[in-house]
Image (cartoon, rainbow, N blue to C red; front, side, top):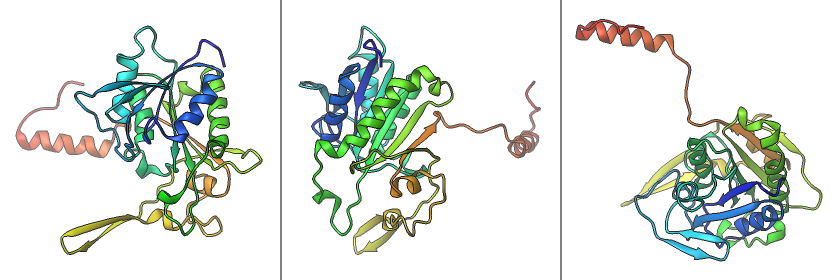
Length: 272
């Protein structure tokens, strides 16, 4: 990694989280890192944006009373005025961000997507933390637990730009297992399509539940080979190369409907 590489580092767990400190320490050994991160936990806020936020000096950089998307906009537009960063890194999130349905929900991934609209490559890194029968809120993570996250992220930050990876991908969604001795292999994956949200009513309250996390046993997980969720539960680091904005090809059936609509309202087809 060149000493001149400029990285904007953010997250959604908040600037005082263990995960962002671990990435900051690792990336700062190889690059010029500017931290712009939420002052407080902004998990699952998606790409929510604010019109105005307060900014505070912090030992790592800048803390904003805002969302990860706010942090990327502020970091790329106002807080790094001398040069546009070469790369945005978001994380490391304490908890995995797996599957298609989290792409619009996760604050960590949303920071990477926001960077993509600025045409700045990005890496979103999250760590799968198996909790068993205890609550995730009762898990205490130390810096050493993020060793896999820092190893994979620094490698990708060092080599992906020069290798041309971001000529074909706007951002990389990286999910790693919690550090456990030997380094884990990397698998190039696609986001799982599983979606198992449901809700139940209890009087005047509605309880929403994400049931995907109930089936994380590597011996019985229903996600197919090649998906991010299967890779991580089986002990591999998952890297999904993704694009933004999302788009689709011209669809002939939709074009036919448009033609029918124009005929119905009495206007001709526009010149092609």
